[in-house]
Each structure stands twice: as structure tokens, then as C-alpha cells.
Length: 248
Image: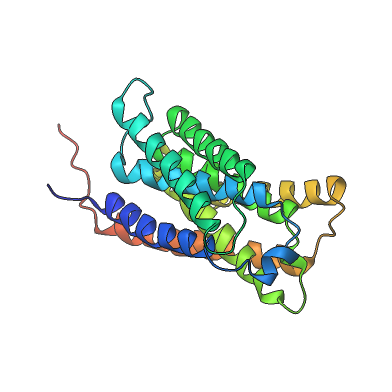
């Protein structure tokens, strides 16, 4: 059976993410993780939210979760057994095994399956990206650590560039969007810019985090660059398409 391009990307992502996650949970806790200020329970939730997303899409890349089907429970069983084994093994390699960590693993997995039961591929990817960006931006101190300033720049660039590309892919499924050449870039940048503003304002008013202009500039650069490259690619592809022939 031929594996389509989307499925290949998912398999590659899972093949990289899962071993890295396993490695990070079985080495001494990095000092920077302790300085992050983020609850390890939230880390577990986010980690397993992303893991179950990749596992489900690796098995069923073109279908929503249907709870009456056996493969949903297969995926959940895989995550449950892996989470239990992961915690047990941590207790054997000098890490602390905690029941609450396992519970948050399951919460993250259930949240991911819940999102996938409501949303199709691109909206689900967008939703998980928004959750991840909000959590790292406002529930972690990683972006304010010194001298690790590069973490801040790298996060804002990669996170908002990726979000913009996902948004454009989602919009690309709409033929009306593809026909609007002039408003195409504005629509493509709208959601990422709104999210950037919302994240910064929430951080300012609820978590008392200052708004750094470098963060905003880096995120806007990533959004604009992703939009420009996608727009040029779109125009080139449109010119290569044969003109439509109107029947008499």
C-alpha cells in the first residue's frame, strides 16, 4: 500500500518525537527544566497530548476519532501501558515515579483524543499548536531565562512560523480562499497575529509578564516570512496550471 505524503510526515514526526520523549524522561532532570517554573504535571499533559496526536494520526491519518471503533481503544491502551511502563522505569533509573504524573499523562491523552474526535486533521493540529504556544508563553519561565536568551528567539520564530504554515494549509482547503489573490496574505496572517496579541495581553494582565518588543518582532517576522514564501509558492503553482476552458 502506498503511503501518502501527509502520512510519511506523521510517521517521521512520531519516529523522532517518541524516542526523544523517552530519552528526556529517563535521564537526570536537566537544570533548565527546574528553572522553567512550569509544573511537571503540565509538562506531562502537554507531552502526552502531542504523543497521542502523533500515534493516532500514524494509525489513522485521515479519520476523526470514533469511540465505537476498536483502534481508538487500541491507541488508548498503547498510551496507558507506555505511560505506566515509563513511570515504573523512571523509578529504576534514579528518577521519581509519581502516580500524579501518570494521571496527567492520561489527561493529556484523553484531551488529544477528544480534540481528534471533534476536529479533522488541520484544525486539530492548529488547536494543539495554540495550546502549546499559550502554555509555554504564559506558564513557563523558559523564555525569560538569562543567558539562555536564544530560547526566547527560537521559540517565537519556530512556534509562530509553524502555526502560520498550519493555518495556511487549513485555509488552502477552501477554494474561495485560493481565488482571493489580493486578500490572501491578510487572511493568512490574521489568526497568528490575533493569537500573538492574545497571548501577550493574557500574559501581561493575568501572569504579569512584560511584553518584550523582541518577542513580538521575532514572531511577526516568522508569520510574515511563512506567509510570503507560501504566497509566492501559491502564485507559481497557479501560473503553471492550464487555463480553464469554458464550454460553449
